[in-house]
Length: 152
Image (tube, rainbow, N blue to C red):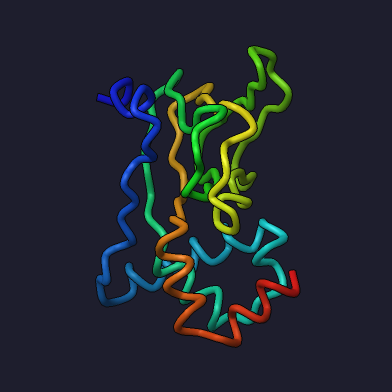
């Protein structure tokens, strides 16, 4: 199924986090806020903006050896590694290895351009996801957030 996606050049569908209630839901959003703060794009945002973004995120699980993003394919999702490890491969050469709290794909939130490298899991991995569509919805509804992101 994922091979069909790779051939088609279409990104995986992103599903925002459930709007669950209670302490467990608050803890999940807090973990997502912490993960988002690792990226310079979100590092200086006030907590209320981070919380709004965290609520728009999803989580995706990958097995070892799966391609998360494909070089040359238009990007539409930003990722933060919650668990696991990935390697960044450009033109067949590994150029970086990333682990917990590292992130990739932030430019896809802004420009949606082609990915500059493959990202492949080196271990079973859980990734926080934020789609360009969800991000743009937030920016259009929160002008203060849009201004802050542009400044970053």
